[in-house]
Amino acid sequence: MTYPAQIRIPATYMRGGTSKGVFFKRDDLPPAAQQAGAARDALLLRVIGSPDPYGKQTDGMGGGTSSTSKAVILSTSQHPEHDVDYLFGQVSIDTAKVDWSGNCGNLTAAVGAFAIHAGLVDPQRIPDNGIAEVRIWQANIGKTILAHVPISQGQVQETGAFELDGVTFPAAEIRLEFLDPADSDSSIFPTGKLMEQLDVPGVGSLKSTMINAGIPTIFIQADELGYQGTELQEAINNDARALAMFESIRAHGALRMGLISSLQEAEQRQHTPKVAFVSPGKDYQSASGKTVKQGDIDLLVRALSMGKLHHAMMGTAAVAIGTAAAIPGTLVNLNAGGKARETVRFGHPSGSLTVGAQARELNGQWQISKVAMSRSARILMEGWIRVPGDDD
View 1: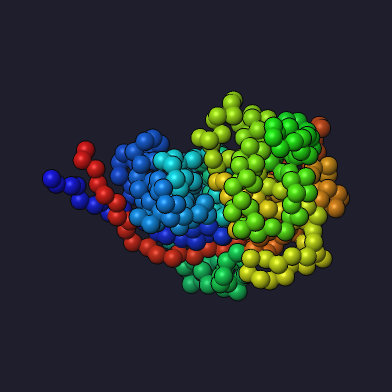
View 2: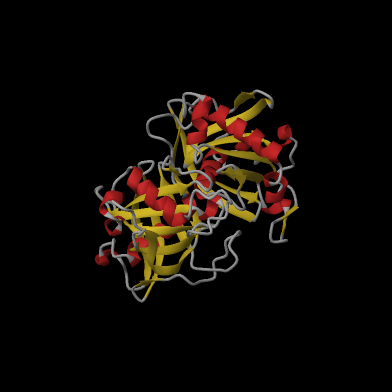
């Protein structure tokens, strides 16, 4: 019996923020995978090493966590005043599923740098030294993101002194601006309320804020779930009961937000919405052993991604946090002190993060013009991905 040989595809393995993913130029993919559909999903699943019943993705580029099971496809932008179109796929670890329903804010930090490396940005827009502004069209959610990428001697500067909690080594700072991050087709608050009770059978009636900015997110009060808000991954991810509870909250919240039409659909939409629990700031020890002081943060946030507590904070969830913190009356804002603010510093399992947001109320509706934060990124490896060919 004969088997097809492996094919090789140009690819780059990058860290962006606290995530890692495989980056492709769309035109480098096999023709069938250059468009949405089963062929593209099957290719990315094989690249990452899913589905893997062992949960390790040993036979692929994934790392067995939601933060390392990601793929990015870039192309020259088809939208005026943009440089690059950015498409993100969250690859399930244990099922044959690629979720295209949202963005990855962490990997967004690597998009501008990759676009320059890959020749997708007009060279005339790149200074010899200074900052290159890369105008990104986020194709999953139809939004504009500006990446301010440092340039040294005409090349992307990757090394530097910027430290990001959740990343071991310092690197160059990349400033991101998420423009008009709320869903244009609906209110920032899909239910029309800044805060409300969310009824979850078997769990209870929970104070919540459900928001659609950056990524749809459900915020819950930590102490109503029996938590302090200082928990690290082990406290949640090793507790099957807790994980089942959060998934039930996520499913009922998604239904309430109008993201799904039945609870059963939540299983097919693992990437969105996110669930996060919040509490007022207090001292705690981060995953690295560093003490985070109450006086250095405004509140605590712990967020789940793909069914597990995230080791730091998803970039898109940080956009949701910054947005909610800027609007008086939300659960996030109340836990941060209850005052109007344009920046918020929150504690997460790996440390802290500062996010800025510009909010205003117009005709009774809240609008967010921009959310900004700093991340870092670098190339880890570049060359070719190899995957088994098929018989067709």
